[in-house]
Length: 143
Image (cartoon, rainbow, N blue to C red; front, side):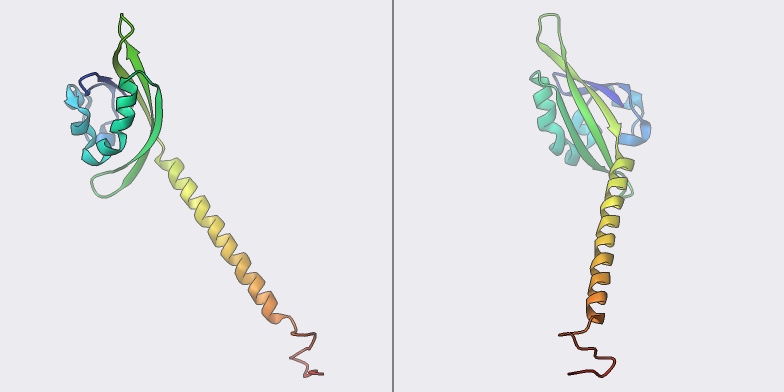
């Protein structure tokens, strides 16, 4: 996805994945960022946009809930666009859908937790099978 944000905080799209925000490219042109991304996402990203509009290059990740409840993740890079006088005219937004990456990371963390539980359980079972104080409870040798 690529978007240009002007000083007036309106979005001019050069390429938008239609299913990402739920709008076609033509529907995004001239709309405010808040209108395109919604209040929740705008609250999360607005300070990044303001930094870029002050001339700073900014990278960040954000989460968005799609209609139907599906959560998606994106990584965005905001690159200021300078006018002929060196002032900030707006910024370019380059975004990448990282939902698959985030889901893979979550699955890896879950697998690592399950492995740790398995090792703990195996160690506990092995400990329970060891004789206590050198005595073999199964053979009856309690001396």
